[in-house]
Image 1 (tube, rainbow, N blue to C red):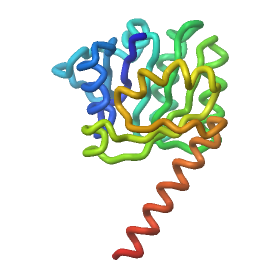
Image 2 (image 1 turned 180 degrees about the vertical axis):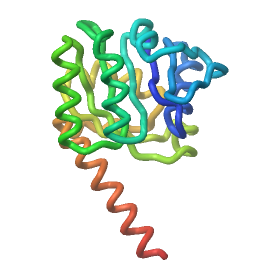
Image 3 (image 1 turned 90 degrees about the vertical axis):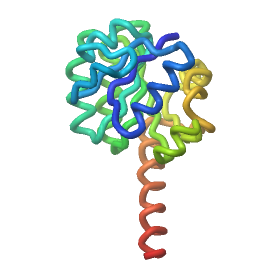
Image 4 (image 1 turned 135 degrees about the vertical axis):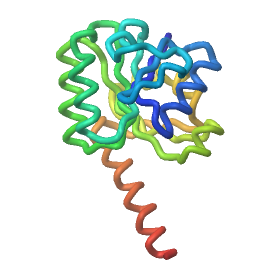
Length: 176
């Protein structure tokens, strides 16, 4: 299986380099061009064409939707979208339906972990969606993470991620 990464920010860029080192990176793209990045492709559509799996790691639901609208025509049977951006459950449901309507599969894979954690392959994924798809993608996601927890539905995975962020924020506020 070959993976493409859409979004080369703080975490996406680190993961893309790990995938590249493992020999499974099909291509990368970012909304702000980074043609010097390993396996750079000029469009997200080109990444989808080159990859079996595309992992989206962008800022928010609006950014995810923008990327999805571009790649939806390139999706079809045999393609998988792994959505790792921090988004709400309602948006995840909407995005899963858009991907499924094209005949592709969708896995919610929000994560916890900072840039140093990502660099050390210590990210933690909260997987939401089809359990068989979680098992199928396990070896690939293990290349960039320490743990992958199957949470349940994509909505439950997104909700847990937001709850974890709230927990961290409360701890930081308490420490301040």
